[in-house]
Length: 339
Ligand code: PMV
Image 1 (cartoon, rainbow, N blue to C red):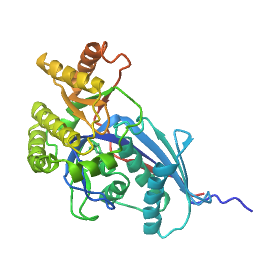
Image 2: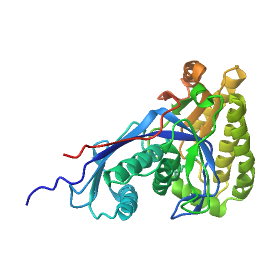
Image 3: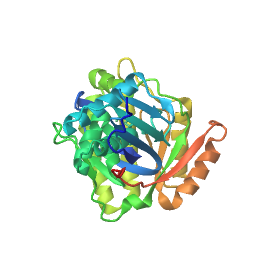
Image 4: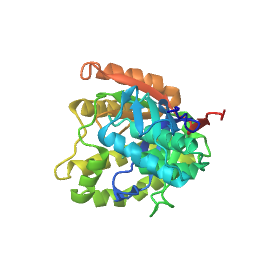
């Protein structure tokens, strides 16, 4: 049998994003339509590069950092590939090769950069020429937060009501605030999270008495955050981001059974962030579906904030690793030239 070379490969790089105003809860599980809109900052230091080639293998395969992807994680990749194949009218298996600089599934937004890169690479490899909005909608089907990783800087994901209307786009940023922001990521635990965001959300929406009140407050949080961006006001943005994230985690803790991503190290880190602020540093905390704490700060003082927090946490979190990240770019895609 002659080896099949397949269609030209495409490679995409997408950066992780951290939500300042969170997505937590789905209105539609299949289409991944969120209950709330969300606002995020894309980060330069955390990213995924993925190559997809259709037609060179007999069945879909994927590797992540050289290891074969199996089980549920593979099923999610195949589901996204199916959407692309359907749209392109092709019936070829795909070979997916992915390299991550983000610790996988530790609440460090690996699914955001991962599915944004997969959407970009798979669409291009299938010969589709999609707009950023179409790519955002496609990435959303893999992981909700991935819809925002198509864009650099600050992005808002409009909740919408159906596949067409639920997409992310860049936020109007008249003062160029994104470029003045940074995030100090406190990697307290790089292991896999115990409860997936999918399960954590489902349980919260169905059982937490605090979920509806959080959703009701959420619209005001987003308005306040967008007004802060409009005004180029980091302290105002930081304050509302911290409130929104703390509220999200409170909804999880009152779910049945509770979902609690905070460890003792997380609590110590949150206290350290409050102490940093008391000491006059610009620092506001946010957390996602894992124990790690991300600290919103200014680009100009990020190194100082990082050093201050590492020093403060040296005793309580001896294994602490940190990443200082700045605003990152949107998705880039390259397609192999045809022979
Ligand atoms: O996209 P998912 O299923 O990984 O959900 C991410 C949800 C949070 O990270 C907790 C919040 C957000 O808006 O990114």
